[in-house]
Length: 414
Ligand SMILES: [Zn+2]
Ligand SMILES: [Zn+2]
Image (tube, rainbow, N blue to C red; front, side, top):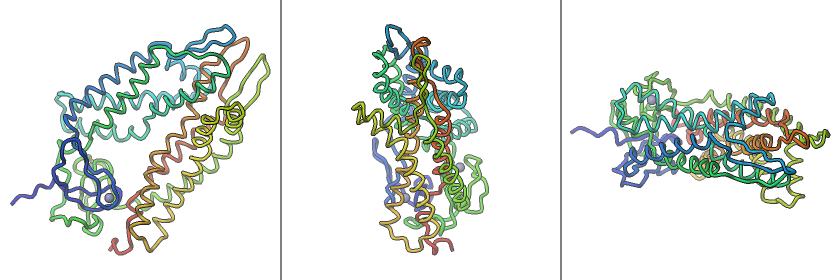
């Protein structure tokens, strides 16, 4: 009797072999050991994902074309479009931040939306083309931040109120809709369904033992397409990417990156992130100055948001990842409860990491809007560059960490 090999999956977080039953439409399957989502069955996935992606793309075209926020400072009217923000940063000689803005807020999300449209519409693509598109999609997905930019705009409004009166145009609502449709299409789109169209996900020759780990059955998971591979395969036949049974050496990478980010965290907090020039007199403010200023002005929630996102989260991330590395390498007696706690910590670090970019976006918006040549201007300062680098390095550090090491016990490795 032929076995339906497609119904086996290997959990990417805890390496358990699980047999999937047919998933009811609108539901998802989760790992019985670590609660990681393994597969989802969204009703009419391709059609709905295409519709939302197309709507999102239309909205971003509208949002880029016109003025979306304006401010009146002492009678002068200044309005900016989304594209004016990277332009201003570029002319201020902060081309690094300008490039990050274009990539994280516009380029990566737009490319991924186009990929969703290509993969889900009725276009005839070869399986090689599908494979390339899915690889690009997975790579870009970590770095898409339009929702963080939108939150950054809302936070910057509170800061901007002290400079003048702010207004939003219809284009601003188009940008909000872009973010909403973008998130909807991501939630609906299921890359594993497209991977399974290219080839079944199981390349194991023997029957799999459900409820046992992959490592003790000489199986490994392809990190790129989540296929189950026998350990002797160097390249995955489905996505042609190299994979290892464990990325044990990547822990050194994680630790090296954490030390780098810790060193950069010092200048990021000591140097100013914004220079305010009023009637020719300039003053520099760093992250903590901004928080204290907001707190004293009575904007306690915004002060807390910036304090948590910019000061607490990077430090918590560095401590958490160091602890995870220690747990994965040095702790010998691991029980399920501790492993589950560590898994939750890792998921939190992965989710929360990019939210530290919020302060960079706040500075970008404020600097682009407050440019009244005669009276006052706000300019970015060198601290922004250090801070953005800290966020990026800690994000790479968490991506390098292999969560399966949390669950590995010495006896599994034989
Ligand atoms: Zn699991
Ligand atoms: Zn693969």
